[in-house]
Length: 385
Ligand SMILES: Nc1ncnc2c1ncn2[C@@H]1O[C@H](COP(=O)(O)OP(=O)(O)OP(=O)(O)O)[C@@H](O)[C@H]1O
Ligand SMILES: [Mg+2]
Image (cartoon, rainbow, N blue to C red; front, side):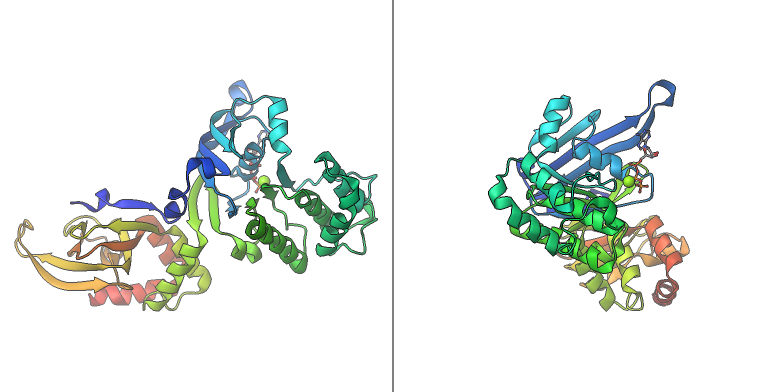
């Protein structure tokens, strides 16, 4: 048996696999998008898949121009979907007309960079208008509005107009307006970009609270590393495609785990997280061959559950092998062939059902480059083996 036949999936796969499709709030499959016409037509989104369930807070990151806002506006029914499936709040958006898209949009809370407050209305009136559009009666509105604006630190500015407010304060009015109707889906594009540390925290705490208390779903684009801790998952977009989709809990667990192992112990939490995010979870049944002696090295492995046996070939053809060692939870293998470029010097066969996290060759070398201590430690271990 070959390692390729094993069950390999991004580390978040398990999170999504358990959710039935009809329970998903966002279910994007094979989504492409193009801007421009004729010769100028340019593809900006490529075959994207994204599934988000009720109560999940997903953070989307990625370089400028990678397509984050475009994806967010498609999910938010702010533009028409062109190719692929884009199911939001149980409705397929691809193929809907302007009126139907508008209906979907009304159920979503938007916190976008361009906040579009009404200049002639006070903070209070801006929020009130959003509530009226959702059919609230004026009797119970006043208390709600004052409560939400105060919670966002605008208690003293309730009756100010946008031009009398700072950029950060205006941004918070926009947040209040998006959240006051308690939408089931909130889409946020850099919601904390104009905010200081304390206001950013207030905003994300409030968002997190909504996911816990009301099972609201949040998809948020941000580069703000101070708020990554609230995310359940982090999605990374590169050149129009979602490159990785990582469950934060699972990455944190893996980090804790890696830290205990000698080669990773010197790494900073940032370096560890970076490596953990790139690793893929693989479950292998007992008796599977993970590595074959003589093959080219393609991955580095860490064992997080189970046990593996190390065998070396007795004859040249590898017909007969000899057991030399076993390894279990917390041990790692596969680094030597990646470091030296030589073929695998032993075979690895699972002794029981095991969970391994693997790091691909390219990511492995990127991690080495980024961290001197990782490189040092690994070389020491590999040369000793
Ligand atoms: N209306 C448009 N017409 C043509 N091209 C566009 C349009 N909007 C975006 N693009 C292009 O699509 C690509 C993705 O843009 P998008 O705004 O989604 O990126 P982003 O990841 O949100 O970037 P940033 O982090 O800078 O906000 C870019 O190459 C951009 O130039
Ligand atoms: Mg953007």
